[in-house]
Image (cartoon, rainbow, N blue to C red):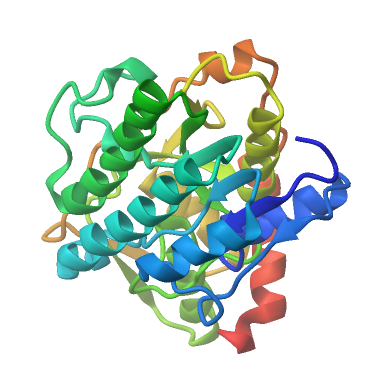
Length: 311
C-alpha cells in the first residue's frame, strides 16, 4: 500500500476497525475511507454498490461483522449467519466489480473442526465438523473465505483471509451477555469486586483452552499482511500460547482484586475444548506478536476502569 492509497475500513468503529484506523494513521496512511452505519448501510446492496462505484477504494479491510459470546450464538443463530453473509457478499462482490487491488477478510477460529489437531494449521479448514454452538456464525465466516478463494480463481482478484485468535484490548465490548470471554470476565470480576459479592458463578467447566491476541498486535499483523506480496491466501494470526478459561479467570481475579470464590456452572456449554492456531505461515513471512497476555490484560483493564461509566 502507498501512503496515498485509498483504504476502506469496513466496521471502523469496532474493536479491530478502530485499532486499524490508529495503526494506519500512525504509519502515515491518511487517505482512509470511514463510514458509520448511518452513512453506509452494509446490509443494503445498492448503498454498498454506490459507495464502491463513487469512492473506488484501492484496499479494503473487512472488519465489519456480527460476533458474540456462546450465549449470543445460541440465542441468535439466524442473526449471526444472515447478517454476516449479507455484509460479506455485498463488500466482496463490489470490491471485485470496482477493481479493488487487495482485500483482507477476517474469519474466526471456529471455522476449523471442533476436533481439529492442535495447533491448528490453515490446511485443516473444512476437514471436519464445526462446534455446534457457533456453527451458523462459523458457516458464514467459512463462506467468506471460500468466496475470496472463488473470486481469486475465477477473476484473478487478490482477496486474502485471516483467522485471528480471539482479540481483546482497549475499545472492546464489555457486555457480559454478548462479549467474548475475556472482556466478559473482566466486567464480571470488576462488578463482583465493587459489589463485594462472596462468589462469582461462571459458565462451563473452565477447562477449555483459548488463545488471545492483543488488538494492537492484530492490527499490526493486518497492515503487515496487506503490505506484503501475497504468498498465502489464508493466514492464521495468533500469539502461539493458550490457557484454560479457569486459568484466565484466576488471572483476572488477581488483577482486579476480587476476594470471593469462583464457582463453575457445568450445566452450561463449554464450546470447543482447544483452539490454538499454528502461525508458522505468518512467521515465515516475517511477523510475530509483541504483547504478552499479562501486559495486554493490564492495558485493557486500565482502559476499562477509565471508561466504565460509558458502557
